[in-house]
Amino acid sequence: MTVLRGLPGFETLWDRRTTIEAPDGLRIELLSLPDLIQSKKTQGDKDWPMIRRLVEAHYLRHREEATEAQLRFWLLECRTPDILLEVVHDHRPLAATLASERGLLALALETGPEQLEFLLAGEERAERQRDREYWRPLRSELEQLRRGASLE
Image 1 (spheres, rainbow, N blue to C red):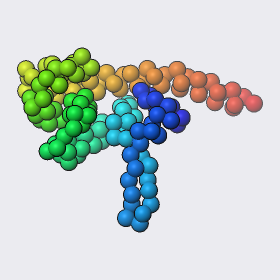
Image 2: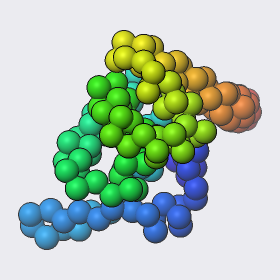
Image 3: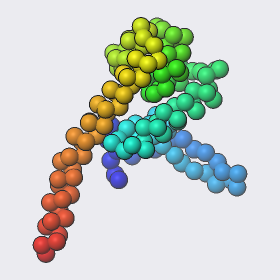
């Protein structure tokens, strides 16, 4: 895969990468967490629980000493109603600023977890639809190439 929907090219992704070191000293280069989250916003049923869990784990690890960048990330990507409500309530001005990017942030101040779960499901449906629309012409092109190759 040379292009990831919604993400910049390789050079930018490489500049934003995360590097981890294994116990044996092996260095492993990975997509940054925000880029990984974006890459998982697909039609795949397995991707959405993974997005939720990755953001939850990041929040639980860093919430005591959160940077503004981390707060922005959680506000824009969190899929767990209770955590999202907590971050919105604790950081109202930032949530209000980001509401233009993620509309449900404005509603999160006025709603409970059940309603927020419903809004999050709507976000997921819309993102899955965008993924289907993105891949539709590419799948068609691949199908035409496959048919052409089978005729030769």
